[in-house]
Image (cartoon, rainbow, N blue to C red; front, side):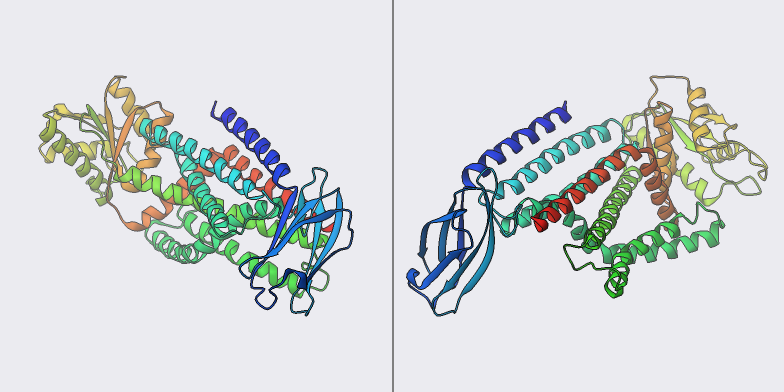
Length: 486
């Protein structure tokens, strides 16, 4: 339904813009400021290469401004020369009149009276899209925070907000122009966003690399632990690639990127805009990932739970808990005590984790023993000791609980909350997670892992958005080329 409304709105705006442009585009008014040395309009000479294309309907000097109003006569092209008799002013330009009688300046798709409505229409469409996305995002988060589409929604919202701000600035500063320049403004938003984010992205990439090196040193050299380094190198490469590409093409005699009649110019422009579009979009999705990850970790479940599942991880050689696992159990105990204090309702702990090849007992049993040592009644503990992964932690715990109406929370490490929540969603479990504190360097890889998972799981949506931006880029370049050769 919302897509149909968007299509109808776009069609209405297109019709209104077309009618408005045809009505007001039949005339064009030149305004030349600071003509202080020439106070008499008769001291200006206005000539056309072709007198049959446009005519002058009014000309005057008002507050040191030369104002010349033109009206279209028939389709065609003509040059205009505005000069003062004392030769202190000389202005040359080209005028085009299309089949609808609209006068455009400098190119067939150039500025015309009424072109402001193109920018306004795009702003209206962006605002509508933002309203729909924000509405969907809020409803989805309220229903279930642990969904990759929440990250996609948030990333796209941030991207559209940057586009909206750029278009509003264009409108307020009177920098809007014809169709080609308006389409270019949409693409420039990507470079505009990247130029704002480049210093931050570059610094963050360095910090992520340092953090990942620390993680690899402490936790081992695996490809998962090196995700941060890989992504950082990607961002650094994409940050410097446009400058490297420009320097290469600028010094290469076989490539001419400064001649607008050359195909080299358009290929270069497309590659450059593609780099900016992809990088800007990816950065905003990554920011969305970070926000959702932090939101998941900081969120406090309602104190009405029947069960809390404690997700296992590696234990010590003597069967005691590692600081990481102890943090998860302590967080569950803290939540249970708070719930008892506020509502008087007890909670049942589900200690979930099997026995690894180098572990003396199962992780579930180790947590069970720890809970007993903390004064938790055995009747309040369910032991799950078969699971080997987070997915199995939740799956097997769900089977042991065996109550579809039960209100369930889970306790894990803060960086792991969103990932565990995703698994719970895949198991159709209505749960809320709480996160225990841990080392900062764990966060980096967690964000990157969820970012990659978001890209993969929502790849069709991301491809559609990026292809849409590509099409705008291609359309602007095609129209620019047509305007050059006509």
